[in-house]
Length: 136
Image (cartoon, rainbow, N blue to C red; front, side, top):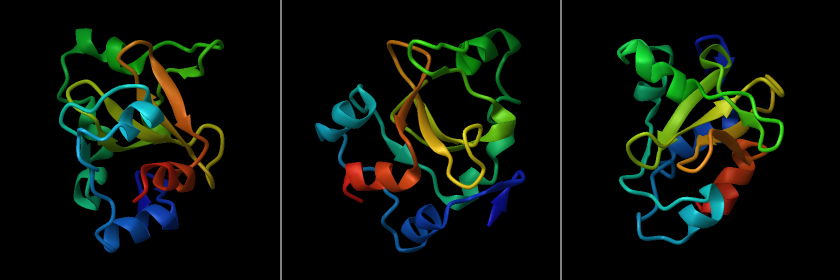
């Protein structure tokens, strides 16, 4: 499956189709362990919402876009997100999205998260690692 020109990893497609791509209970300590933050209202997106990928910034007021886009950060990469090279796959609550980042590799995107204490940070080198760490 291709969304906005980006190939959805087969392991993510399989988890969605098998009904495993669902957010663990928000009280789980694994959110802090994996993302560095607690979950407020975690939501793992179904494929139908992933296909609306590029529109997530369209409805946003211009003055908010900078917050969501972030700034490159060499100390805690990547620091930013490129909407044309990423695919939103979930969020932990308001202003806490996470996405596949295809900049490192089209075949093996990393997973990045808009941290509450920083800009976008890498939380897993690939979706397989994220799924394993979340136990789903």
